[in-house]
Image 1 (cartoon, one colour):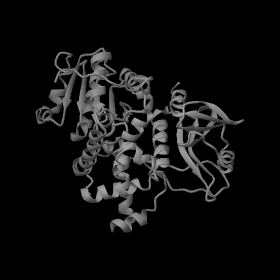
Image 2 (tube, rainbow, N blue to C red):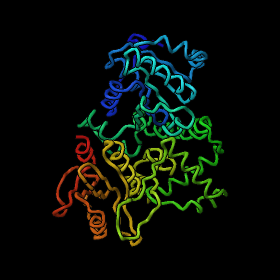
Image 3 (cartoon, rainbow, N blue to C red):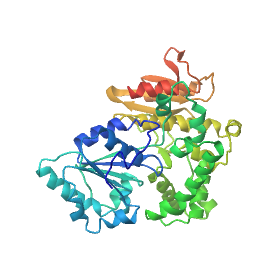
Image 4 (cartoon, rainbow, N blue to C red):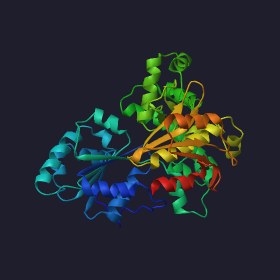
Length: 406
């Protein structure tokens, strides 16, 4: 399908922060892959970017369409037709043997003087899964991850009308966030969860009972923001702890779960060494916990950890590649929700509080001393910025995201 504005029109409602990285990647690499969960906006971003910003003629293939998939029966002959053009291939995980061929075509076109912007691949599987089923394009490909909408993207689009409670409760998947009613948003999320366990995960190889995976996913939601004991979950599902670990890795690979690893610096303190588990999208979390409306969320025991996960995920997806993230917890409960380590030996300690009047205990400050924190922040649900102590700043989420995006 040739991309023409007359035949393929899409309305860009919310610009994506990934556009700058995509522009740079296509200008410098022959192959760029945008990966992320289904329904997150990869197709919209790729096509609209090619239409509006790219200086080559572009063509689009959707490998979920039998008509487009059949064009690749003799893939080499077909792909050789697109010299000096950008070819967008959607749902590329349906044709894993394509990577070997792309490597050869890239090298041929490189020798002919065409070095960048040859192929834009869109895939619903993670980079690791794609690489497991394909021959590597090392040195020829750059991977970019597209997340659901972030709070900063929504705020930039409409600063005056921005409602943080809406994106927190509904999550950032476009069809959920933009649904006309809360009922439609919730229904979409329920359909999404069912489709993921019944269709998407089995298609990529993991043979897990959809009923068991959905039950595991729901159980995992109750551990949101905590370390999990694999053997305990295994007993509940009547499987081994190694099987539970494989289920957890599947949901991580499919961008549904975030495992935040413990801080790995030098200290004499005894540290908790298990990762913290978060459901990455807060809207999906609320559906898994059967929280039907925002008032119910405010009265639910998970409200604090839900906000913590929402804030942490927004920070992580907005970090540049120069930063690493972890959490810190000792066996005597000294804890930091999020540790950011960046250029010039910067170490930022972040505490996340739902309260509009946050306070800190001495355990946080002891933990900051342990890791050698150079800055301390409390991110809360308010919008004012002010010093809590002489070396600790209280700041709202949007202002913090703007700061790390600079």
